[in-house]
Amino acid sequence: MNDLPNTETTEAANVEPAADPLAGQPIVEVERDGIHYTLLGTAHVSRASVEAVRALLAQGRFDAVAVELCDARHRALTDPDAFSRLDIFQVIRQGKIGLVTANLALSSYQRRLAEQLGVEPGAEMRAAIEAAGEQNLPLWCIDRDIGLTLRRTYAAVGFWRKMTLMSGLAVSLIASNEVDEAEIERLKQGDILESSFHEFAQRDETLYRALIDERDRYMAASLRDEARFAPKPGARVLAVVGAGHLAGLSNYLREEAAEPAREIAALKEVPRPKPWGTWIGAALTVFVLGGFAWGFLQGSDVGGEFVLRWVLLTGIGGAIGCIAAAGHPLSVLVAFLISPLTPFHPALSSGMASAWVEASLRRPKVADFAKLRDDVGTLGGWWRNRVSRVFVNFFLTNLGTVVGVYLAGWNMIKQVF
Image (cartoon, rainbow, N blue to C red):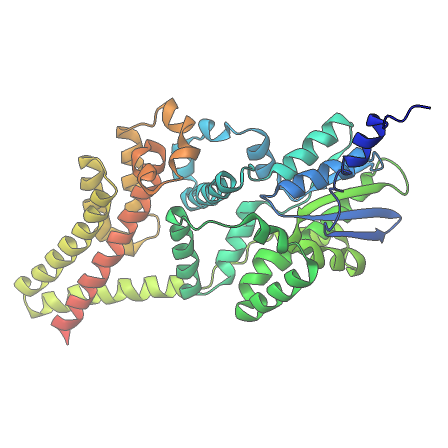
C-alpha cells in the first residue's frame, strides 16, 4: 500500500477557486416588448467593471450589445488619434471652441483617474465593443450626443449656475485629488447611488434632469427603438451603462409608454436661449450709445473723452487677456481693436477674432495634435500646445473684454450721475 500523499490532490485542494467577477456587480434584468435586457452598471474607471463585462459576454447568451456611448464618443474611444485630425479653423468658425475645450477637460480628468488606478477611461466600454465584434453581435450606441447634452444643460441653468459649471470645469484641469478605487467600487451599490442622486437632485434639480434623468430617458427610448431591429424574437440584449444610470434607466425601460422615436426627437431638441442675454446686450448698447450722445451734448471734449475711455478700457482688457494667453503680438492687436465693438454684436467676438489670428500665425503642427490629449493634462500644457493655446486665447481674451466693458461702463455711470 502506498502511504505517500497524493501531491496532485493536495495541490488542487490548496488552490483557491477564482473569484466570481460578477459577484456584487449591479445587474438589473428587464423584460419589455418580448426583449430581455440585462443592464450592467459599471464605474467608468474600474478593473472590476471590465472583468464583469467580459464575464457576461463570455457566457455567449446575448444577441446584441448596447453601450452608454454616442457616435462621437464611440469614435473617440475606438480612434484615439481623432484629435490629430481636428480642423482648428472649422472649430472656431462653427463656434465649437467651448464644446471641444469641455471634451478635452473631461478627457484630461478621466486620464488622470486612469493613471491613479491603472485602467484607461472607458475600458469597460471598449471591452464590450471588442467582445461584440469578436462574436459578430450588433453594437448599439444608445447615449445622446455629448454636444447636445452639454448644450441642453447649459441652456437649462441660470447665469450663476453657468458660472459655477465653467469654474468647476476650469478647476478640473488642475485638480490632483486622488480617488480611491475601493471608493469607486462602493459607488456601484444601488441603494447608495439612489440616495446620492436623490440628494443631488434636491440640491440642483435642473442640472440633475439635464445631465442624468434626460439621458436615462433617452437611453431607454434608444434601447426600445433599436429593439425593432433585434436579430430574433425574444432576443437578449446586454446594456453596459454607468452605475449612476442604472435605477433611472431600468425604471424608464419598464414603464415609459411614449413612442420611442418621438421621445428621442424631443430629447434632441435644444431649448431656445432665454432672452436675458439679448435684453442685457440691447440694454448695454443703448446705455453706451446713450452715454456717448449725452457726452457730446455736453461738449465735444466730454463726448470724445467718453469714447476714448471706452476704447482704451475695453481694448486694453481684451489685449491683456490675449497677452495672458501668450498670444502673438498681432493677435493682441486684433483683440485690442475688436474688444470695443464686441458688446454691440455677438458676431464681433474679440476672443474668436484673436483666436483665428493666433491659429493662422502660429499654425498648429502635427506634433501638437499628437500630444494634445497629454498636454491638456497639466495647466502649463494648455499654453505649451499650439492647439489648446488657441482655446486659452479665446477664453482669456473674452474674459479680458468683459472686465474692460465693466470698468468702462462703471466709469461712464460715474461721469453721467
